Structures are given as C-alpha cells and as structure tokens.
Length: 433
Ligand SMILES: Cc1cc2nc3c(=O)[nH]c(=O)nc-3n(C[C@H](O)[C@H](O)[C@H](O)COP(=O)(O)OP(=O)(O)OC[C@H]3O[C@@H](n4cnc5c(N)ncnc54)[C@H](O)[C@@H]3O)c2cc1C
Image (cartoon, rainbow, N blue to C red; front, side, top):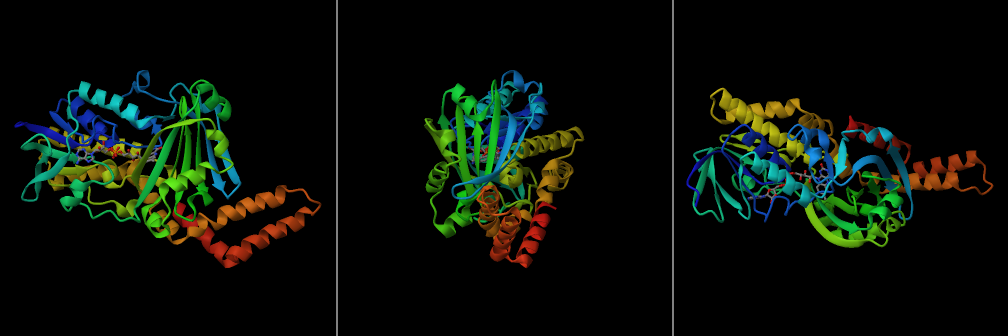
C-alpha cells in the first residue's frame, strides 16, 4: 500500500505517458506511473512508424540504443481496385541521412526501451495495475485509486495518458462515450521472413525500409486504409476502418485483412512469411471536432485519450509524445511560478498545444472525417475509375488514343456526372484546405 503523495501521477506507459513521465522525472519531480499491462508496450499496438523529431526532443541520443527496425527511404501510395492498383511512389537517397527522420519499430520492444529511460530518470513505474477511479475533492482531481495497490494515491496533478478508450475520463465525465463514427478498428499481423528476402523484395539494403499506404476497394466500401511496413526481418501488414462502418456492413475485420492479403499486389510480398503476431486496436480518427476537454482542476489528458491522431498522415505516436511532453512542461512552468494546477492555470497546456503542430494539423483536416463519412465514392468509385483509366490507356489494341481518352472521360461522367465530379473536387479541396 502506497501512502505517499506524489508531485504527479501519470496513468499509462504508452507514448504519451512515457513522454510525460520522462519530462517530469528528468526535472526531479516525484512521479508515479501506473500501467495496467505486464510491462510498458505489452498492451500497445501500432503499425508502426516512429517520427524521430519528437523523440529527439525527449532523448536526443536515442539512436544509440533504441530498438529501431528500418529507416524509411521510400513511400508508396496505392489506390486499389479488385485486381490492380495505381500507385504513387517517392524514394530518395536523401533519406539515408545520418539522423534519419522516420523509422519502423515494433511497439512492444520500443515501449520497453522507452520505459527504461523513464525509470532511469527516476520515475516509479508500477505495472499490472489498473487505475480504476479518479479521486475527487469537489471538482478537483486529487489522486487515483487502483485495483491493486490498496488504498489511494495522491498527487498535485494526474495526467491521463491511458489511450483511446480512456475509461477514466469517461467515468469522470470529462469525455463523452466513444462514438463508433470517431474511431477506426485496425487489425494487423507481423509476418517473419529472412532479412535478405525482405531486402530483395523491396529493393533495399542495410537498414533501409519501405512503407506502402493503400486505399480503395480493399476496405470494401468502408472508410479506411491499409498499410504494409518493412521491419528488419518481418513485414507488418494491416487494415483499419471506421467502427461505425464495420457495424453497418457486418464485415469481420479478420476477413477484411485476409481478403486484402490475397490481393495480387500484396500476396507476393508476404509469400513464405510466418505470421507470428496478430493484434487489433482502436484508433481515434474523429479529428479536431472530436477532441474533448483536455484539462481541468488537477488533471490533463494527453495522446490518444485526447483524440490526437492525424489519420491523413497516419501520425499518432508523435502527437502522443508531443502532447505528453507539453503537459509535463506545463506542470514544470506552473511549479516554477509557484502556481497550483487549477483549471485556469492549466489552460497553458491548451495554449502550448494550439501553438504546436499538434492542434495546427488537427485543425487543418477538421472537415476530412465528415466529408469522407458522407462520400464513400472516394473509397469505391474513384479507385475503380482511376484503375480502369490506366488499363484503357495502357492496353494497346489498335484503338486510337483520342478515342481511348473519350472513353475514359465517358466512364467518369457516366459514373459521377460532370456536376458530381466538380462537387467531389470541391469536397477534396475542402478536406485538405
Ligand atoms: C494498427 C495501428 C497502427 C498505427 N500506426 C501508427 C504509425 O505508423 N505511426 C504513428 O505515429 N501512430 C500510429 N498509430 C497510432 C499510435 O499507435 C497511437 O496514436 C499512440 O500509440 C498513442 O499513444 P498513447 O500513449 O496515447 O496510447 P497507448 O499507446 O495506447 O498507451 C496507453 C497506455 O495506457 C495503459 N492504460 C489504459 N488504461 C489504463 C488504466 N486504467 N490504468 C493503467 N494503465 C492504463 C494501456 O495499457 C497503454 O499502455 C497506430 C495505431 C494502430 C492501432
């Protein structure tokens, strides 16, 4: 039973929780971090691309010993039809820089390493302990109770970095119930292959790697995307769609992934691999308009719990790390000014987030979720039309090119009408505005 009072309690040892606990402990605060999993990372699921810049701000020399898989030199984007795809592809030798910007990682290993840094900085991490309740004194959060420690633990501030479900924030009324239209359900597998096979299949060597992002028919009319990442000796493959769409269409996520893996563009990339890991997880994809209240008397919310995910660019871990760090820096600044962690003073956290890329990017894409929800043609009709156009133009059969162009145009207008095409172009502009 812990009787002491801490300067800060951090709930969760994922990206946001580790960033917050590390920042606070590095500055000498007495930090208690509680994690329900057996160890940091044991419950965490991610694709996973790690964005170096945000980690560098916390651990500048992370490249010395972090378990990194491959640095990314190539990004592909595929628009999928049933048996074909049209792709964009960017590869640059500039990405072979001394301090690469993006890496693939395996979360269970990475989080364990991240957590070791947090503990070395002096935070007390207790695993296999679920925080069951926030302790209140009136409207103010003063501590937590758990399923294991027996009794209550108190602190000046509680940072909720407990991930997308954030049962605690919901129970306390800080956040509404999760709307199935605001979360994606993603499933992923890791397929193990010899390192040489991964490298020859993707035309890379050393620790260089490739990412493929996919959209179109693979999600069977649902709003979502697929992904494939190269690790050192494995390939991660997965797909995620809005939970509301899964409910409506009654498609099983496992079947969706099986069908996607059978696509002629994907099957050969996985051939001969041994599947050793399967995981499913929610991703908060409701965007800016779904962000709940993120601070109040004695509490702040960071990471997925605050819905900080930029689904367009598949960024979440970097927003989690940044919001965790900014929450911690807010506490440090208030303490330096001898100010308590009241809701009014913690508004500084919101200001810091607003001034950072986190809120700027979330705001930029605020129209995206609504537009995509209402316009399934972006996941069905357009990928089909674009693939058909490519097929028509590339098939050499004696028909002249002008007639082929006319056929492509006719195909587009017969499926969406001129007015529909113009409307869709406007919607896309607005979504990316
Ligand atoms: C399939 C998939 C692919 C993704 N791909 C990418 C990608 O490529 N790049 C990227 O940047 N992002 C990606 N994301 C998003 C990214 O994983 C998340 O944004 C990020 O992990 C959020 O970190 P977090 O710390 O907020 O939450 P989490 O990492 O979920 O951590 C929350 C922690 O809190 C613990 N916890 C929860 N409740 C309690 C409680 N009551 N008591 C104690 N502990 C508790 C959990 O066990 C967990 O360890 C992906 C997500 C998924 C699901």
